[in-house]
Figure 1 (cartoon, rainbow, N blue to C red):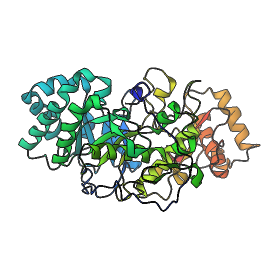
Figure 2: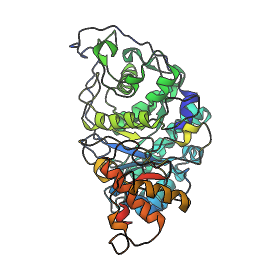
Figure 3: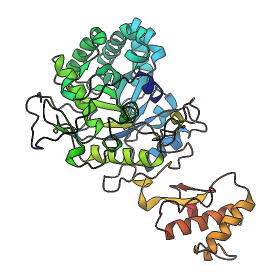
Length: 463
């Protein structure tokens, strides 16, 4: 999860600002990677991570309804929450379930425990609930290295239990890694796995190759940028369009990198090739950008988070691939769905979400034209309403401004008209705020009213 990234990411990046002919090809390094099915998907997808350090988290039933409204078809859980798995039954939403780090010791030490875990968390729900993968631990090699010797035994035991249940073809088993297991990530052609981890990495990659499972990587250009300010430009981290002079160039392959994430993915492919593994695909199990930070994180802003995640979604759904592997587009799980407001400092830890816990968007993604994913969070289906907990006097002043100088259409909330009921200041304010917001074309700042309004995906007229 994101809280471990800042302490574990030690990436050395050399930025090449010179240009070379842009027609350079990747033939010197491109291995023949088998086109594995990514979790029963033939097309790359964008999913979301669901952390639960959230006050007033939606009930499982409401959560699943929200996912369906937002057209989110892939989620990753950090456990195997039975209530959520039950609520996902008979939907088309696909889910990665996880073995928490604190369960690895038991599962890695006992085949019986592993079989029991599969029976309780997989067999009990599949196929009604579309479990696609099991993520065994999270960043184990860098956050709890003492457990590393048990990681592969745990993975193998769980896989054996899937074989016994005849589910090993439908459900893949892997483990998410921090980016810091790979050293010298730029240029990607020189990347390699931390050699102190070889005794675990080599047999793990062999297992992934043998079982057709992905290499799960948690990749955060945000932290690469923060640890290399002045070396890695912000635009490269945010997928912003670049002039050729600003592209990163790998001097060994002459490949041009227009964004940091592609370089990180290709570094993983090169690192695997260095260990003679060329048929395992990279699945990005976490990537994102925080929308708020403390004074030491000035680039954690809503604008940057919006830019990164919007461009990330487009990049994946456009089948862009990477410079080294244009034929393979990694699927990505955005970190994360909700702001986890119960997480400890720094401030950014509680502000990675696309939505607040009440399911209102933290910011509006610009993803129109990229299919239906998060379609209800974009231009045509957002509204402006009065926030909860605002005193009536303050709301009345904002309502008066909206209906007066703001020139909102308030005729329908007059006595006897169709939206007069319920006759209270909050309902009337929501109507007026939204009228103004729609009149202004949903422009930035048009849903504020001195801090008493917020954007939502729920129509105030139908609340």
